[in-house]
Length: 150
Image 1 (spheres, rainbow, N blue to C red):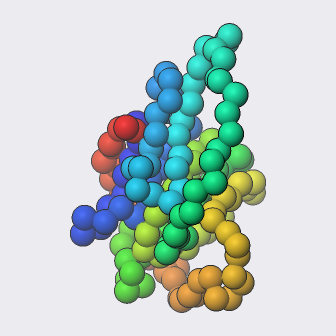
Image 2 (image 1 turned 45 degrees about the vertical axis):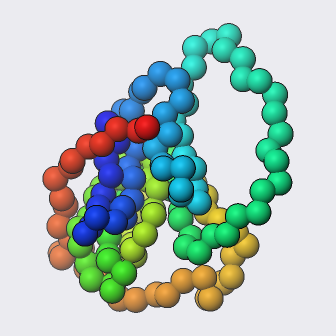
């Protein structure tokens, strides 16, 4: 199942665990998001029609990131827009997370390889505001409440 992590009605992140196995195309993000993420599962022989993507002007106001954990374990800590710590989750090998809003920080718990995808162009120090996060001892792992992809 997909977990949507929310705070005061806003989506902070969407966690797609490695165990998710729906058939077909399951979009995990609403159409309004600047990052569109789907889980796709097709049987052998399925043909996806050749296509091009049309040039469309889009305005992106907030960077959204997608992290895929190829190997390892990572604790992700969630913060609201005022930099207040909210909760944490552990990501495992094969998990994918879409970081939508608020702040976040990470602690690498095992040797880890991950893939990050986000909008560009990257603006260096102008692209983010850094702030002091929590220590390992302060982390609160929250119970999981699952949603489904659309």
